[in-house]
Image 1 (tube, one colour):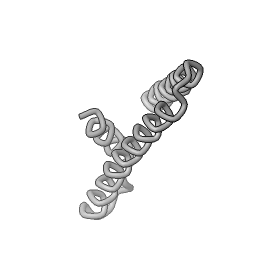
Image 2 (cartoon, one colour):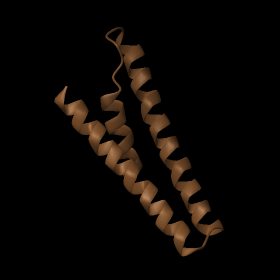
Image 3 (cartoon, helix red, strand yellow):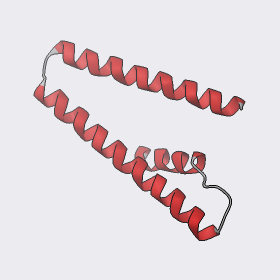
Image 4 (cartoon, helix red, strand yellow):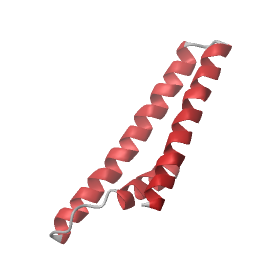
Length: 83
């Protein structure tokens, strides 16, 4: 459900240049599918890393990386809303 919501939001943000409706739909559908695939690959990679490096420092490092990514995403969203 979260992957679908992320794909919808990315599709809304990555609108195509004005043109034929079919081209715009194809572009936004590609962005939606790409966002979902990226989310699935990243979550699978994180799961693999957690299984491979089952040390406390590795789990903390993954949480720090996730927090930085979330912070950058929030900043980019705020900058996009301002402009």
